[in-house]
Amino acid sequence: MDLTVLFNISYGLYLVTSNDGTKDNGAIVNTICQVTNTPNRVAVTISKDNYSHYIIKNTGIMNVNCLTEDTPFKVFENFGFQSGKNVDKFADWNFTRSSNGLAILNEYSNSYISLKVEQYVDLDTHGMFICAVEDGENLSSAPTMTYSYYHKNVKPNPNTNTKKGFVCKICGYVYEGDTLPDDFVCPLCKHGASDFEPLS
Ligand code: FE
Image (cartoon, rainbow, N blue to C red; front, side):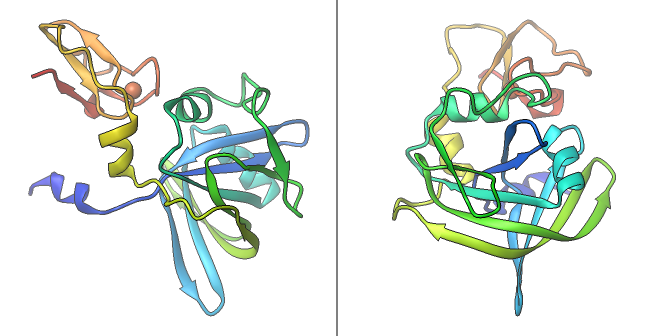
């Protein structure tokens, strides 16, 4: 089959915030979807490699901040390409708190939704949190950034002067060389070799 059919599913991009008891954490997530409406439930799927997965599995709460089209690449670098295990991701950002105590990124979010986990589904590499909607607020009328908008307009374009190499489809990192090792991991966004394509 042609696996590129999967590229036709549309996604938004969101900053999911949580707190481990000592500091605020945030992760960039695209796999968020409202799945029922009576009552309202939202499913959030997060890689088990992410510190946020560990925190949310333990605390049972999170905020979803809906990122807007004007969100700069530095937001994705800060919250998406490093781990909250090692850094305080909110150290350099202005934020407020919702009624559940979790962070809201005021700039670059058009709204936040406070979620409480009702069910957890183990998906091997990922965990799916099926959540009740506890609270939420609109912050602006700016459109939510889609994953395709990010790929077209936000992710840096690769340096096309490089003759031979591979570019990370997620973050734009360029690996220079004739062949890309199968076990290569992007130093920027930590995605594997399957998310690289040859420079044309
Ligand atoms: Fe990358």
